[in-house]
Length: 614
Image 1: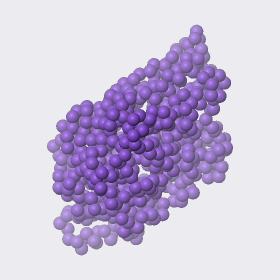
Image 2: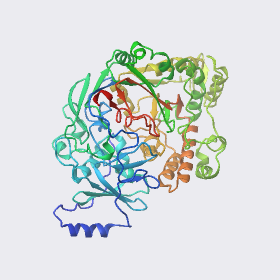
Image 3: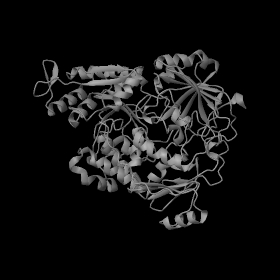
Image 4: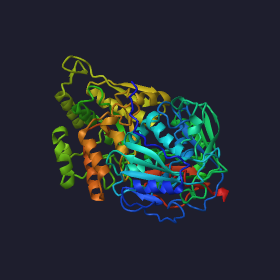
């Protein structure tokens, strides 16, 4: 059922014909506090880069433009609109063809600088934010980016777009034009991050969609953006070719110096990851990210590497581990029972899996923010963390306050002690083995479907190992493998018992935490809250993060949230990816400066270039 979305009240838009003096008067009257326009904004304190900065710290402003970069995806695509809820577009398009008012510097925890907007202004409490558009900002067809386009984009994405855009729109009280190139957004909730989040929404061209259905756009409509690349051609199911716009309006901006350096960006599609890897070995791709440390050490010795035509580059990172693993759907019984989830976690033989799959080279994720200062600390909760959690003690697992560590196996294939503990937990939940099959008190067998996407060889091999422990518990799960399009549709509808989850987390987590774990998102189709958790404690910890005025309070709230998430046993954690591993053609090079967030699309391919173009 489609959920009705309440649209925020809209103040009257000021007519563009008003005189400059009247506009100035309105602006003065509506100012709630003395504020000055700025070139950037930071979540805490001042942005690190001065107004006259030349480029982002990890970009080379002298990087040449040229060459063809070939990227690889698995599966296929049925849409070229990366902003809709239904459909499977090439994921790269969101970053290549469209822009937002501001852009992140990934060498700071959370700071933005002007892109489509030349300045940002907000009050001390950040109850509103005002943007001034650059007069030179243009869409790829040459038409100007207007305030009307911006307001329409916020409303359309917030009501008809992907679920990731819904939360911001629901927290907007009003959005209004306050000058020829100015707009102000007023928020109805106390949330200091909203001023920054508002600057990151993609801006689309309103005129393109006047007589078209935005939600049903597939391969017949190519969305018009203002980004450096435009779609040149595509072959359904095979490839998409983008060209760098020769008239790109923003090529001289500091935030764009040394970025988007390839002249042509081609995305090729392959049946699965194995076929893609073979294509890379044969010279069909410009680069490939490898997430398996064992495969990195074992399989990257093919002739092109030995000749030096392919370079192996490792990129360190200071960001949190995030969460990668197998998520359980608490919307369904028996996964709504924490004892069952805990049992499935105890049965998972991570030490043996890690040695088998990665050669023991990748340590386990120990919590959602592990590897960073935001991670839950060992032992009982103390100080501010304890104070935040205590009001919810009755609804939390005792371990949230008392302390928690993941189960550790003995490294053997049988993992006897841990499987025994899993059986005890299942028995506590009234699940016992009867005639070789795990059944409840009514004699109903334990049913469990594990959903995987086609071509996900690594997770398939992990599940194959997991099946041994499950069978010893009397569980015979159904393993369902579907193509990428079907997989995405089933995630949208939450049609799974267990599946793969990957959530990258930042050094400045904020509103996206509501999308990942918030109660309001739990039943929203297409939500990223895959586990379906509805935790008042998690909601409160997220709110505490969003209203924190000091880094100390923010860190305490993040550590408290980490405890709620980890002790909730919603996910069976897998390996950390604290080092980015990129194999690339020798002609691709980079500045040598790594942002604190390490590797990502903002780094590779965004700031890399072809040395042959010099």
